[in-house]
Length: 487
Image 1 (cartoon, rainbow, N blue to C red):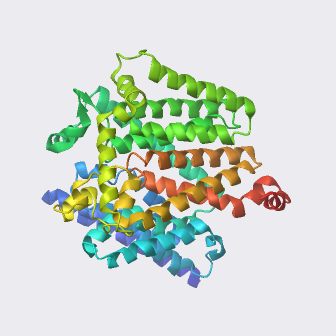
Image 2 (image 1 turned 45 degrees about the horizontal axis):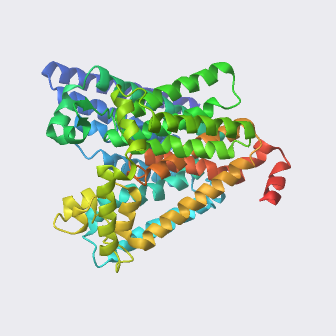
Image 3 (image 1 turned 90 degrees about the vertical axis):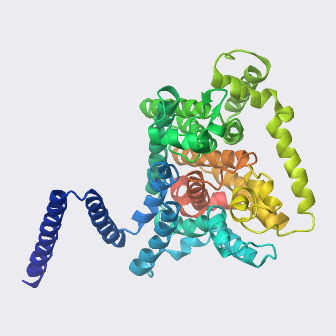
Protein backbone atom coordinates (compact mmCIF):
# COMPACT_ATOMS: atom_id res chain seq x y z
CA UNK A 1 0.00 0.00 0.00
CA UNK A 2 2.84 2.36 0.91
CA UNK A 3 4.64 1.53 -2.34
CA UNK A 4 1.46 2.25 -4.27
CA UNK A 5 1.01 5.60 -2.49
CA UNK A 6 4.62 6.53 -3.23
CA UNK A 7 4.14 5.75 -6.91
CA UNK A 8 0.95 7.80 -6.97
CA UNK A 9 2.61 10.68 -5.19
CA UNK A 10 5.56 10.52 -7.57
CA UNK A 11 3.25 10.52 -10.59
CA UNK A 12 1.17 13.34 -9.11
CA UNK A 13 4.32 15.39 -8.53
CA UNK A 14 5.43 14.96 -12.15
CA UNK A 15 1.99 15.98 -13.42
CA UNK A 16 1.97 19.01 -11.16
CA UNK A 17 5.42 20.09 -12.44
CA UNK A 18 4.33 19.70 -16.07
CA UNK A 19 1.10 21.67 -15.47
CA UNK A 20 2.97 24.45 -13.64
CA UNK A 21 5.59 24.74 -16.36
CA UNK A 22 2.91 24.76 -19.03
CA UNK A 23 1.10 27.63 -17.32
CA UNK A 24 4.32 29.63 -16.95
CA UNK A 25 5.30 28.96 -20.55
CA UNK A 26 1.83 30.00 -21.78
CA UNK A 27 2.00 33.27 -19.83
CA UNK A 28 5.44 34.06 -21.22
CA UNK A 29 4.29 33.35 -24.79
CA UNK A 30 1.30 35.68 -24.34
CA UNK A 31 3.59 38.42 -23.01
CA UNK A 32 6.04 37.89 -25.90
CA UNK A 33 9.08 37.36 -23.70
CA UNK A 34 11.16 35.21 -26.07
CA UNK A 35 14.39 35.19 -24.06
CA UNK A 36 12.51 34.27 -20.91
CA UNK A 37 11.01 31.31 -22.79
CA UNK A 38 14.44 30.21 -23.95
CA UNK A 39 15.75 30.53 -20.40
CA UNK A 40 12.85 28.52 -19.02
CA UNK A 41 13.33 25.71 -21.55
CA UNK A 42 17.07 25.67 -20.85
CA UNK A 43 16.39 25.54 -17.13
CA UNK A 44 13.97 22.62 -17.50
CA UNK A 45 16.39 20.71 -19.73
CA UNK A 46 19.23 21.41 -17.30
CA UNK A 47 17.12 20.23 -14.36
CA UNK A 48 16.30 16.88 -15.94
CA UNK A 49 19.88 16.54 -17.22
CA UNK A 50 21.18 16.80 -13.65
CA UNK A 51 18.58 14.32 -12.40
CA UNK A 52 19.45 11.77 -15.07
CA UNK A 53 23.18 12.32 -14.52
CA UNK A 54 22.81 11.12 -10.93
CA UNK A 55 21.11 8.01 -12.26
CA UNK A 56 23.60 7.54 -15.11
CA UNK A 57 26.97 9.14 -14.21
CA UNK A 58 28.30 8.24 -17.66
CA UNK A 59 25.99 10.87 -19.21
CA UNK A 60 28.24 13.92 -18.53
CA UNK A 61 31.27 12.04 -19.84
CA UNK A 62 29.51 11.18 -23.09
CA UNK A 63 28.35 14.80 -23.28
CA UNK A 64 31.97 15.95 -23.17
CA UNK A 65 32.76 13.98 -26.34
CA UNK A 66 29.74 15.33 -28.22
CA UNK A 67 30.05 18.92 -27.06
CA UNK A 68 33.80 19.06 -27.80
CA UNK A 69 33.02 19.10 -31.53
CA UNK A 70 30.94 22.27 -31.30
CA UNK A 71 32.37 24.13 -28.30
CA UNK A 72 34.63 26.48 -30.31
CA UNK A 73 32.57 26.89 -33.48
CA UNK A 74 29.46 27.87 -31.54
CA UNK A 75 31.16 31.09 -30.42
CA UNK A 76 30.71 32.41 -33.97
CA UNK A 77 26.98 32.45 -33.30
CA UNK A 78 26.69 33.07 -29.55
CA UNK A 79 29.16 34.90 -27.34
CA UNK A 80 30.13 33.10 -24.17
CA UNK A 81 32.85 31.10 -22.39
CA UNK A 82 31.63 27.80 -23.79
CA UNK A 83 35.03 26.20 -23.34
CA UNK A 84 34.43 26.25 -19.59
CA UNK A 85 31.41 23.99 -20.17
CA UNK A 86 33.83 21.09 -20.79
CA UNK A 87 35.49 21.82 -17.45
CA UNK A 88 32.12 21.91 -15.71
CA UNK A 89 30.94 18.64 -17.28
CA UNK A 90 34.11 16.79 -16.27
CA UNK A 91 34.02 18.10 -12.69
CA UNK A 92 30.29 17.39 -12.50
CA UNK A 93 30.92 13.85 -13.75
CA UNK A 94 33.41 13.30 -10.94
CA UNK A 95 30.92 14.64 -8.38
CA UNK A 96 28.03 12.41 -9.45
CA UNK A 97 30.33 9.39 -9.82
CA UNK A 98 31.70 9.76 -6.31
CA UNK A 99 28.36 10.57 -4.70
CA UNK A 100 26.48 7.73 -6.36
CA UNK A 101 29.04 4.95 -6.49
CA UNK A 102 32.24 5.56 -4.55
CA UNK A 103 32.28 2.00 -3.20
CA UNK A 104 30.98 0.31 -6.36
CA UNK A 105 33.41 1.94 -8.80
CA UNK A 106 36.09 -0.49 -9.99
CA UNK A 107 39.12 1.47 -8.81
CA UNK A 108 41.39 -1.44 -9.64
CA UNK A 109 40.84 -0.56 -13.31
CA UNK A 110 42.76 2.68 -12.80
CA UNK A 111 46.13 0.98 -12.34
CA UNK A 112 47.48 2.11 -15.69
CA UNK A 113 50.53 4.12 -16.66
CA UNK A 114 48.44 6.62 -18.62
CA UNK A 115 46.60 7.54 -15.41
CA UNK A 116 49.85 7.78 -13.46
CA UNK A 117 51.29 9.99 -16.17
CA UNK A 118 48.21 12.25 -16.25
CA UNK A 119 48.65 12.84 -12.50
CA UNK A 120 52.41 13.44 -12.77
CA UNK A 121 51.98 15.71 -15.78
CA UNK A 122 49.25 17.75 -14.07
CA UNK A 123 51.38 18.06 -10.92
CA UNK A 124 54.29 19.28 -13.05
CA UNK A 125 52.06 21.84 -14.76
CA UNK A 126 50.86 23.03 -11.33
CA UNK A 127 54.46 23.39 -10.18
CA UNK A 128 55.03 25.66 -13.18
CA UNK A 129 53.22 28.31 -11.12
CA UNK A 130 56.43 28.47 -9.06
CA UNK A 131 58.45 29.20 -12.20
CA UNK A 132 60.05 32.66 -11.67
CA UNK A 133 58.89 33.58 -15.17
CA UNK A 134 55.25 32.58 -14.53
CA UNK A 135 52.82 35.33 -15.52
CA UNK A 136 50.06 34.55 -13.01
CA UNK A 137 47.32 32.15 -11.96
CA UNK A 138 44.59 33.35 -14.36
CA UNK A 139 46.69 33.01 -17.55
CA UNK A 140 48.01 29.68 -16.24
CA UNK A 141 44.48 28.35 -15.72
CA UNK A 142 43.22 29.25 -19.18
CA UNK A 143 46.33 28.00 -20.99
CA UNK A 144 46.97 24.74 -19.13
CA UNK A 145 43.51 23.24 -19.65
CA UNK A 146 44.15 21.99 -23.17
CA UNK A 147 47.56 20.53 -22.40
CA UNK A 148 46.93 18.99 -18.98
CA UNK A 149 43.63 19.52 -17.13
CA UNK A 150 41.35 17.66 -19.53
CA UNK A 151 43.68 14.69 -19.60
CA UNK A 152 43.91 14.69 -15.79
CA UNK A 153 40.13 14.78 -15.34
CA UNK A 154 39.04 12.60 -18.24
CA UNK A 155 41.40 9.63 -18.44
CA UNK A 156 40.46 8.06 -15.06
CA UNK A 157 36.76 8.55 -15.84
CA UNK A 158 37.10 6.54 -19.04
CA UNK A 159 38.68 3.67 -17.09
CA UNK A 160 35.93 3.87 -14.43
CA UNK A 161 32.78 4.56 -16.45
CA UNK A 162 33.36 3.78 -20.14
CA UNK A 163 35.47 0.65 -19.89
CA UNK A 164 33.41 -1.77 -21.99
CA UNK A 165 33.85 -2.66 -25.64
CA UNK A 166 30.28 -1.46 -26.20
CA UNK A 167 31.38 1.95 -24.95
CA UNK A 168 34.27 1.96 -27.41
CA UNK A 169 31.88 1.17 -30.25
CA UNK A 170 29.60 4.01 -29.13
CA UNK A 171 32.57 6.40 -29.18
CA UNK A 172 33.60 5.31 -32.69
CA UNK A 173 30.06 5.64 -34.05
CA UNK A 174 29.49 9.09 -32.51
CA UNK A 175 32.93 10.31 -33.60
CA UNK A 176 32.47 9.22 -37.22
CA UNK A 177 28.84 10.42 -37.37
CA UNK A 178 29.66 13.94 -36.15
CA UNK A 179 32.78 13.99 -38.33
CA UNK A 180 30.52 13.27 -41.31
CA UNK A 181 28.36 16.25 -40.34
CA UNK A 182 31.54 18.33 -40.09
CA UNK A 183 32.63 17.23 -43.57
CA UNK A 184 29.20 18.09 -45.02
CA UNK A 185 29.33 21.50 -43.34
CA UNK A 186 32.75 22.05 -44.91
CA UNK A 187 31.39 21.13 -48.33
CA UNK A 188 28.59 23.69 -47.90
CA UNK A 189 31.12 26.40 -46.99
CA UNK A 190 33.36 25.53 -49.93
CA UNK A 191 30.85 24.95 -52.73
CA UNK A 192 27.76 26.91 -51.65
CA UNK A 193 29.03 29.61 -49.31
CA UNK A 194 29.38 30.60 -45.68
CA UNK A 195 26.43 31.73 -43.57
CA UNK A 196 26.22 35.34 -42.29
CA UNK A 197 27.85 34.53 -38.96
CA UNK A 198 30.78 32.79 -40.65
CA UNK A 199 31.16 35.71 -43.08
CA UNK A 200 31.29 38.07 -40.11
CA UNK A 201 34.00 35.91 -38.52
CA UNK A 202 36.01 36.00 -41.75
CA UNK A 203 35.57 39.79 -42.02
CA UNK A 204 36.83 40.24 -38.44
CA UNK A 205 40.19 38.69 -39.28
CA UNK A 206 39.55 35.06 -40.14
CA UNK A 207 39.98 35.77 -43.85
CA UNK A 208 43.69 36.48 -43.37
CA UNK A 209 44.39 32.77 -42.93
CA UNK A 210 41.25 31.26 -44.45
CA UNK A 211 41.00 32.99 -47.84
CA UNK A 212 44.19 32.41 -49.83
CA UNK A 213 44.51 33.42 -53.49
CA UNK A 214 40.75 33.89 -53.57
CA UNK A 215 40.10 30.34 -52.34
CA UNK A 216 38.31 29.59 -49.07
CA UNK A 217 39.90 27.12 -46.69
CA UNK A 218 36.91 25.29 -45.20
CA UNK A 219 36.75 25.23 -41.40
CA UNK A 220 33.32 23.66 -40.78
CA UNK A 221 32.20 24.12 -37.15
CA UNK A 222 35.75 23.75 -35.81
CA UNK A 223 38.01 26.49 -34.49
CA UNK A 224 39.86 26.94 -37.80
CA UNK A 225 40.85 25.23 -41.03
CA UNK A 226 43.97 23.71 -39.46
CA UNK A 227 41.95 21.89 -36.83
CA UNK A 228 39.29 20.89 -39.36
CA UNK A 229 41.94 19.46 -41.68
CA UNK A 230 43.63 17.51 -38.90
CA UNK A 231 40.27 16.19 -37.69
CA UNK A 232 39.34 15.06 -41.21
CA UNK A 233 42.74 13.42 -41.67
CA UNK A 234 42.26 11.70 -38.30
CA UNK A 235 38.82 10.36 -39.22
CA UNK A 236 39.96 9.37 -42.72
CA UNK A 237 42.83 7.10 -41.67
CA UNK A 238 40.72 5.46 -38.94
CA UNK A 239 37.88 4.86 -41.44
CA UNK A 240 40.34 3.35 -43.91
CA UNK A 241 41.67 0.93 -41.28
CA UNK A 242 38.11 -0.03 -40.34
CA UNK A 243 37.39 -0.60 -44.05
CA UNK A 244 40.10 -3.28 -44.07
CA UNK A 245 38.56 -5.07 -41.08
CA UNK A 246 36.74 -8.45 -41.01
CA UNK A 247 33.24 -7.10 -41.58
CA UNK A 248 30.38 -7.76 -43.98
CA UNK A 249 30.54 -6.05 -47.39
CA UNK A 250 27.86 -3.50 -46.49
CA UNK A 251 29.77 -2.26 -43.44
CA UNK A 252 33.07 -2.22 -45.35
CA UNK A 253 31.41 -0.12 -48.07
CA UNK A 254 30.19 2.37 -45.44
CA UNK A 255 33.70 2.73 -44.00
CA UNK A 256 35.18 3.24 -47.48
CA UNK A 257 32.63 5.95 -48.32
CA UNK A 258 33.41 7.66 -45.02
CA UNK A 259 37.13 7.49 -45.83
CA UNK A 260 36.52 9.22 -49.19
CA UNK A 261 34.34 11.91 -47.61
CA UNK A 262 36.81 12.60 -44.81
CA UNK A 263 39.85 12.75 -47.10
CA UNK A 264 37.93 15.09 -49.38
CA UNK A 265 37.14 17.18 -46.30
CA UNK A 266 40.84 17.26 -45.50
CA UNK A 267 41.64 18.52 -49.02
CA UNK A 268 39.18 21.44 -48.90
CA UNK A 269 40.67 22.58 -45.59
CA UNK A 270 43.85 23.54 -47.43
CA UNK A 271 45.90 22.34 -44.45
CA UNK A 272 49.13 20.93 -45.83
CA UNK A 273 50.72 19.95 -42.51
CA UNK A 274 47.83 17.66 -41.59
CA UNK A 275 48.84 15.25 -44.37
CA UNK A 276 51.08 13.83 -41.64
CA UNK A 277 47.97 12.36 -39.97
CA UNK A 278 47.00 9.87 -42.71
CA UNK A 279 50.66 9.43 -43.72
CA UNK A 280 51.91 8.42 -40.26
CA UNK A 281 48.73 6.48 -39.57
CA UNK A 282 49.10 4.52 -42.80
CA UNK A 283 52.73 3.74 -41.99
CA UNK A 284 51.73 2.26 -38.62
CA UNK A 285 48.88 0.32 -40.24
CA UNK A 286 51.27 -1.28 -42.73
CA UNK A 287 53.79 -2.16 -40.01
CA UNK A 288 51.15 -3.71 -37.75
CA UNK A 289 49.14 -5.44 -40.47
CA UNK A 290 51.09 -8.69 -39.88
CA UNK A 291 50.56 -9.37 -43.58
CA UNK A 292 53.55 -9.28 -45.94
CA UNK A 293 51.36 -8.79 -49.04
CA UNK A 294 49.54 -5.87 -47.43
CA UNK A 295 52.88 -4.33 -46.49
CA UNK A 296 54.22 -4.66 -50.04
CA UNK A 297 51.11 -3.45 -51.86
CA UNK A 298 50.51 -0.71 -49.33
CA UNK A 299 54.08 0.52 -49.69
CA UNK A 300 53.66 0.56 -53.48
CA UNK A 301 50.45 2.59 -53.20
CA UNK A 302 52.00 5.06 -50.74
CA UNK A 303 55.06 5.39 -52.96
CA UNK A 304 52.82 5.90 -55.98
CA UNK A 305 50.90 8.64 -54.20
CA UNK A 306 54.15 10.38 -53.28
CA UNK A 307 55.40 10.15 -56.87
CA UNK A 308 52.07 11.51 -58.13
CA UNK A 309 52.27 14.51 -55.82
CA UNK A 310 56.01 15.24 -56.02
CA UNK A 311 56.98 14.45 -59.62
CA UNK A 312 53.89 15.00 -61.78
CA UNK A 313 51.62 17.90 -62.64
CA UNK A 314 48.47 15.81 -62.86
CA UNK A 315 45.49 17.58 -61.31
CA UNK A 316 47.37 20.87 -61.07
CA UNK A 317 44.30 22.73 -62.28
CA UNK A 318 42.47 21.78 -59.07
CA UNK A 319 43.27 24.17 -56.22
CA UNK A 320 43.12 21.55 -53.47
CA UNK A 321 45.59 19.26 -55.24
CA UNK A 322 47.81 22.19 -56.21
CA UNK A 323 48.03 23.41 -52.61
CA UNK A 324 48.64 19.93 -51.19
CA UNK A 325 51.37 19.36 -53.78
CA UNK A 326 53.39 22.23 -52.31
CA UNK A 327 53.84 20.15 -49.14
CA UNK A 328 55.75 17.60 -51.25
CA UNK A 329 57.58 19.90 -53.65
CA UNK A 330 58.61 22.97 -51.66
CA UNK A 331 59.90 21.16 -48.57
CA UNK A 332 62.47 23.14 -46.61
CA UNK A 333 62.37 25.94 -49.17
CA UNK A 334 58.76 26.78 -48.28
CA UNK A 335 58.56 30.29 -46.77
CA UNK A 336 56.60 29.07 -43.74
CA UNK A 337 59.18 26.35 -43.10
CA UNK A 338 61.97 28.91 -43.22
CA UNK A 339 60.13 31.07 -40.67
CA UNK A 340 59.55 28.09 -38.37
CA UNK A 341 63.22 27.13 -38.54
CA UNK A 342 64.23 30.66 -37.60
CA UNK A 343 61.73 30.70 -34.70
CA UNK A 344 63.18 27.45 -33.34
CA UNK A 345 66.68 28.96 -33.53
CA UNK A 346 65.51 31.96 -31.49
CA UNK A 347 63.82 29.71 -28.93
CA UNK A 348 66.92 27.57 -28.62
CA UNK A 349 68.95 30.63 -27.67
CA UNK A 350 66.32 32.04 -25.29
CA UNK A 351 65.62 28.73 -23.51
CA UNK A 352 69.26 27.63 -23.20
CA UNK A 353 69.37 28.55 -19.48
CA UNK A 354 65.65 27.93 -18.75
CA UNK A 355 65.10 24.17 -18.27
CA UNK A 356 61.51 24.78 -17.09
CA UNK A 357 60.64 27.20 -19.87
CA UNK A 358 59.06 30.62 -19.74
CA UNK A 359 55.95 29.53 -17.83
CA UNK A 360 52.47 28.43 -18.89
CA UNK A 361 50.69 30.98 -21.16
CA UNK A 362 53.92 32.83 -21.90
CA UNK A 363 54.21 31.82 -25.56
CA UNK A 364 52.24 32.20 -28.77
CA UNK A 365 48.66 33.47 -28.72
CA UNK A 366 48.37 33.18 -24.94
CA UNK A 367 51.53 35.24 -24.55
CA UNK A 368 50.16 37.92 -26.90
CA UNK A 369 47.00 38.07 -24.82
CA UNK A 370 48.54 38.21 -21.35
CA UNK A 371 52.10 39.50 -21.86
CA UNK A 372 52.40 40.95 -25.38
CA UNK A 373 55.77 42.61 -24.74
CA UNK A 374 57.61 39.40 -23.76
CA UNK A 375 60.10 37.53 -25.95
CA UNK A 376 58.07 34.33 -26.20
CA UNK A 377 54.87 36.18 -27.11
CA UNK A 378 56.56 37.43 -30.27
CA UNK A 379 57.78 34.02 -31.41
CA UNK A 380 55.12 31.90 -33.12
CA UNK A 381 54.60 28.43 -31.62
CA UNK A 382 52.52 26.69 -34.29
CA UNK A 383 53.76 23.28 -33.20
CA UNK A 384 52.36 21.52 -30.13
CA UNK A 385 55.85 20.36 -29.19
CA UNK A 386 57.35 23.82 -29.67
CA UNK A 387 54.70 25.27 -27.38
CA UNK A 388 55.43 22.67 -24.68
CA UNK A 389 59.14 23.38 -25.07
CA UNK A 390 58.68 27.17 -24.85
CA UNK A 391 56.38 27.06 -21.80
CA UNK A 392 57.77 24.13 -19.81
CA UNK A 393 61.33 23.88 -21.11
CA UNK A 394 63.33 20.81 -21.97
CA UNK A 395 62.06 19.08 -18.80
CA UNK A 396 58.41 19.34 -19.81
CA UNK A 397 59.12 18.44 -23.43
CA UNK A 398 61.07 15.36 -22.31
CA UNK A 399 58.18 14.21 -20.10
CA UNK A 400 55.56 14.47 -22.84
CA UNK A 401 57.81 12.85 -25.46
CA UNK A 402 58.68 9.96 -23.15
CA UNK A 403 54.99 9.25 -22.62
CA UNK A 404 54.19 9.52 -26.33
CA UNK A 405 57.00 7.10 -27.20
CA UNK A 406 55.79 4.73 -24.48
CA UNK A 407 52.27 4.80 -25.91
CA UNK A 408 53.49 4.19 -29.47
CA UNK A 409 55.56 1.16 -28.42
CA UNK A 410 53.11 -0.24 -25.85
CA UNK A 411 50.11 0.26 -28.14
CA UNK A 412 51.88 -1.49 -31.01
CA UNK A 413 52.79 -4.39 -28.70
CA UNK A 414 49.20 -4.81 -27.48
CA UNK A 415 47.74 -4.69 -30.99
CA UNK A 416 50.37 -7.05 -32.41
CA UNK A 417 49.42 -9.82 -29.97
CA UNK A 418 45.66 -9.22 -30.13
CA UNK A 419 44.01 -12.35 -31.59
CA UNK A 420 40.38 -11.26 -31.95
CA UNK A 421 40.43 -9.85 -35.53
CA UNK A 422 37.45 -7.49 -35.08
CA UNK A 423 38.67 -6.03 -31.80
CA UNK A 424 42.20 -5.81 -33.13
CA UNK A 425 40.97 -3.86 -36.16
CA UNK A 426 39.07 -1.34 -34.03
CA UNK A 427 42.03 -0.79 -31.72
CA UNK A 428 44.33 -0.45 -34.73
CA UNK A 429 42.01 2.19 -36.23
CA UNK A 430 42.14 4.22 -33.01
CA UNK A 431 45.90 3.69 -32.68
CA UNK A 432 46.72 4.83 -36.22
CA UNK A 433 44.62 7.96 -35.71
CA UNK A 434 46.39 8.91 -32.47
CA UNK A 435 49.87 8.30 -33.92
CA UNK A 436 48.91 10.41 -36.93
CA UNK A 437 47.84 13.29 -34.68
CA UNK A 438 51.10 13.00 -32.73
CA UNK A 439 53.02 13.29 -36.00
CA UNK A 440 50.95 16.23 -37.25
CA UNK A 441 51.46 18.04 -33.94
CA UNK A 442 55.08 18.56 -34.98
CA UNK A 443 53.83 21.21 -37.41
CA UNK A 444 50.54 22.27 -35.80
CA UNK A 445 49.19 22.49 -32.28
CA UNK A 446 46.35 20.04 -32.94
CA UNK A 447 46.88 17.64 -30.04
CA UNK A 448 45.74 20.24 -27.49
CA UNK A 449 42.61 21.43 -29.33
CA UNK A 450 38.96 20.32 -29.37
CA UNK A 451 37.73 17.80 -30.38
CA UNK A 452 40.99 16.09 -31.29
CA UNK A 453 42.40 16.05 -27.75
CA UNK A 454 39.25 14.44 -26.32
CA UNK A 455 39.17 11.75 -29.02
CA UNK A 456 42.87 11.02 -28.58
CA UNK A 457 42.62 10.70 -24.80
CA UNK A 458 39.71 8.27 -25.10
CA UNK A 459 41.45 6.29 -27.86
CA UNK A 460 44.65 5.99 -25.82
CA UNK A 461 42.64 4.73 -22.85
CA UNK A 462 40.95 1.98 -24.86
CA UNK A 463 44.21 0.80 -26.42
CA UNK A 464 46.06 0.60 -23.09
CA UNK A 465 42.95 -0.71 -21.32
CA UNK A 466 42.71 -3.64 -23.71
CA UNK A 467 45.79 -5.39 -22.35
CA UNK A 468 44.34 -6.12 -18.90
CA UNK A 469 40.58 -5.75 -19.28
CA UNK A 470 39.79 -7.10 -22.76
CA UNK A 471 42.63 -9.22 -24.09
CA UNK A 472 41.64 -12.24 -21.99
CA UNK A 473 38.07 -12.27 -23.31
CA UNK A 474 39.10 -11.56 -26.90
CA UNK A 475 41.91 -14.10 -27.12
CA UNK A 476 40.25 -16.91 -25.19
CA UNK A 477 40.41 -18.09 -21.60
CA UNK A 478 44.04 -19.10 -21.63
CA UNK A 479 45.46 -16.69 -24.21
CA UNK A 480 45.95 -13.84 -21.74
CA UNK A 481 48.54 -15.95 -19.98
CA UNK A 482 50.15 -16.82 -23.30
CA UNK A 483 50.36 -13.22 -24.46
CA UNK A 484 51.71 -12.18 -21.08
CA UNK A 485 54.49 -14.74 -21.37
CA UNK A 486 55.28 -13.49 -24.84
CA UNK A 487 55.44 -9.96 -23.51
